[in-house]
Amino acid sequence: MKNIIDFMGLFVEQLKEQKDGERQQLEALKKLREQTTSNALQGAIDVHIGKTREQMERLEDVFSLLERNIHGENNMGVKGLIDEAFELEMRCTDDDVRDAGIIASIQHLNHHNIASYGTLCTYAEELAEKNVAILLRESLAEEKNTDRMLSGLAKEEINLRAIH
Image (cartoon, rainbow, N blue to C red; front, side, top):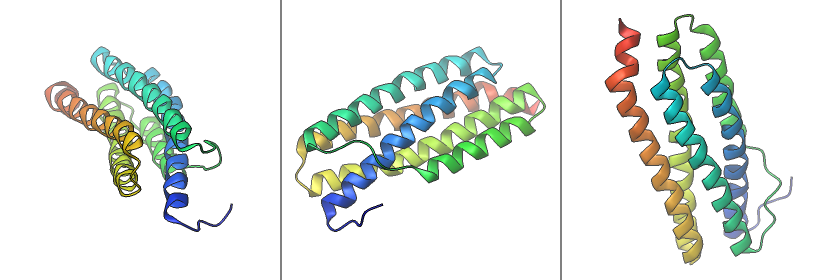
């Protein structure tokens, strides 16, 4: 692990962590999808998986624009959130309650992404990396949309089933 000596170095470090976080989330989403019983939730997770793949590709484009190496960092925060998600999923013995817990866990990950992409957008703008900022803002918007979609699904269907 090398020292971060300037703002661009911090930006690249954060980008690498986000890329690793997206990779971890992609694998976790696939596994969490297998544990759901709601067709609507499975469909929402499928959409999220597709968006996660797009965001990973977008991050590769960012690294290309910056002419930087994409590899090197592990996102321990995302790992912790994923570990918590699987622990919660295993402890929920009722299918509907498990589905509600899975939505909550995915939203925890999304909120982490919203914060991360928000920071990355700000850094890109401050570094005058306009094309990079455009790509990152697209991912930030997708994360916010996914969060709204999951909130709606939880309020309109999943949580109601879990309560009864």
